[in-house]
Length: 287
Length: 252
Image (cartoon, rainbow over all chains, first blue to last red; front, side, top):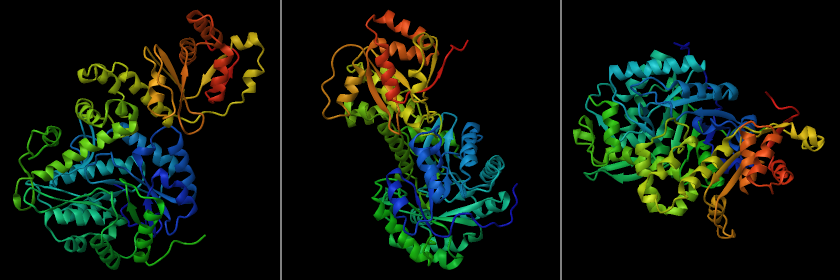
């Protein structure tokens, strides 16, 4: 287990954006309030070419957060040692300001299924997730952040509330948490629970990063709202309201705008970062 | 208890209902909520294949490609989370996929698209001064070995593979000819390039890739076609920044 004394995230306390290669020029010439970028680890595991060249250039100017989507920390089986080695290599040469992953699983014996699949919250799954996080932090030699998921269903066997599950993980492993405010809204709507109660119970003292993103709206078989975490749209007003609640309760935190599908032009994405900056109450430092 | 194996097998079988123990709010069956995960897996992996194989998709059409991808991703899910490598099994799969039998060149188009994607992510080549090659006297040239950039590959086919690929990526391209063709894949900058090779030139580059010395590779190409033009292919390789080193004696 790593040192559990609280540490400041090395990400600047300003808006960041999930990096898409088409925004490279916009980011370099007109970053606005954006002070850091987040990349999906798995997209930068090639040997060379444009992805790594762009990343090296961006890393000279912006703080970088590496966000893994494929480590499958919630899997029943062991972590994939090859993938952990690839991650160690990336984090080793890039030395990012932060590394984060998800409370989810995506890999089983038969392969990798490219979605953040849910897990029940029990003492057994808690022990398993903690063991996997210990292994990740020991291998990478750094503290990681774990992100709360968007969920669409529940498990009959669940005995722990998600917030308690996450707090216990942070306490046992020393990892930090990444609070995705859109995921809180999506899950609360889908589970028909109160997002404010969730946020008020959330251990904000462990939070090193916030996420904001868009979702799609659907209905379930009974006609109840079913929100889908798509990252394909602007952040909606109720999520901005929850974000404001988090900032009021816990202070400003590095905040990422995620937009991964139907990606807009740079000015539209930057406008989302501008809006986050007004909530954070501070513009990015001017060089 | 709902194990992950059970969750996954229900996820991949559209006929199967959600596992017991997986619920919606108020304890109702999960129903459509389970389908969200099901759709995410199938759609995201299908999109990864669409991104990797745009010409295969164009040749068969969106509906065929989507149905084919649904069969493929269940038989060959990704073996790692690095999706830039996903689809290496597609050429082999297409060879024995009966609905695609009327397009016998489709597996080779898939091989070419895999090679282009590999080139995109390949290691950057070491800088190379072309004079190191042009300054060599002819006899030393023939005993030299060439190192090629990590992006360099040859995709040879009994079909006019480069012509088919080009006709589907370039609106101004001529219709493909007939007969066997090979494509040379290189990456002079950040964007991969596919160039048509005649059969003897393909034999030559393949021999270099297999580690043969320049003289041996040229001899093999001459046997394939006495009209093989060594200076032309060396010029092409230099122009495509495909050569990274020249060693004056073959390594044993």
